[in-house]
Length: 121
Image (cartoon, rainbow, N blue to C red; front, side, top):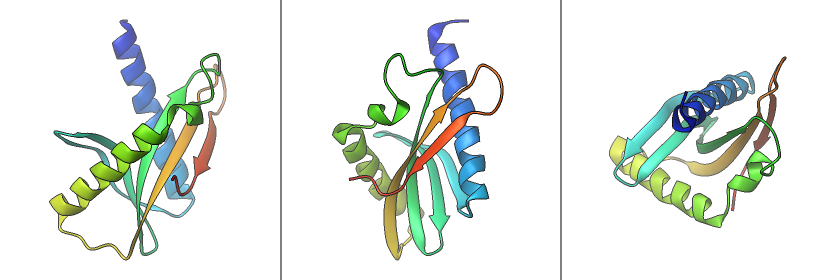
């Protein structure tokens, strides 16, 4: 399997784990892998009256850093831009908006480690 396919499969796994985790926390999943010409939003959810745009980062280990370290200022700005595009495309007027990140560390066996950080930037 090519590295690109492996990364794609790992990313899809992480997004499934993250979505399940967030739904178990009480959030409502509205959209996943939403794309436009500017990029992709991994997960869009609702937390009460708050519209949540979530970046998911998945790793199999921390040799290249913790998954949370991959979400820098540039990625955060991109997520904010994509969120405004999603809001425009869906014609919604949210009471409030939040930007979250979920880090997923896949274990060779057993459950993945999931860390949810609310409110980037």
